[in-house]
Length: 115
Image (cartoon, rainbow, N blue to C red; front, top):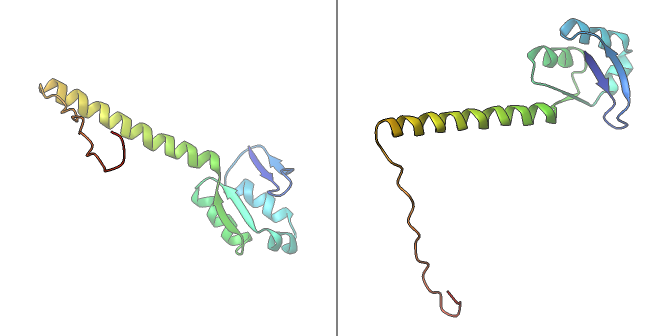
């Protein structure tokens, strides 16, 4: 489903079943040139076709990535790093290697501060 919401009010402006460039074009084509020119920000995921539509219909609008996708992409990246760390740990364990533990370092006594 394609949903268009007003940034300032949070109100639903337009919605249609389906997604993709042709659906989004239907929204923009339903607007007058003045309405399209008044659009200042467009928030959506990083799909190239969305950027193309915004460029074609609202060239002065600033393109923003929506927070949902930013968090989702960050979580995907963190998950991949976690998987790599687990694979590396399993590989080292299979090779009989052990991870070196960091020894506690004694902090130097700074004059006037208790240790």
